[in-house]
Length: 141
Image 1 (spheres, rainbow, N blue to C red):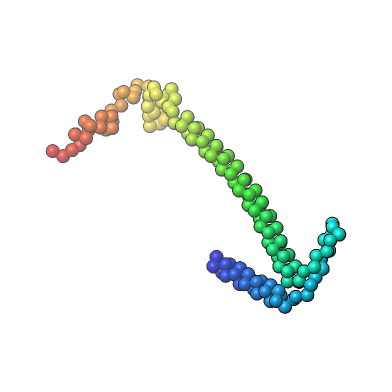
Image 2: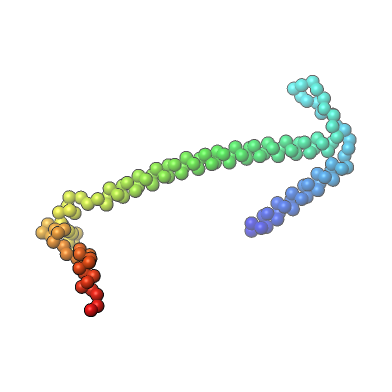
């Protein structure tokens, strides 16, 4: 689909250039332009006036598109800043929620979700509580 679009624009561009060159070579008639806010006159061949109009229109459209691009880019930079700020706040909130509260440090939760005050951190012996001793125990003789 992208190739078809590029091919279409290439064909349109070649056709416009061909028409402009044909027009330029066939019209040598001088045109007198009156510069409106001033009292001056400008006499030039037809092809020069047409080509100059195309060039001015192209430069104007480039300027308009550049300002639109700059406005969109500025909006994107602002939104990225807001996103980074919110992401940092989310990470801080997640870190705060991961810190154990008083109930969790005093005991462990049982199967039904209640905190068992009799079982302390020091009382819980797991496979990972002393890894070097357990590695020796798990090795084959």
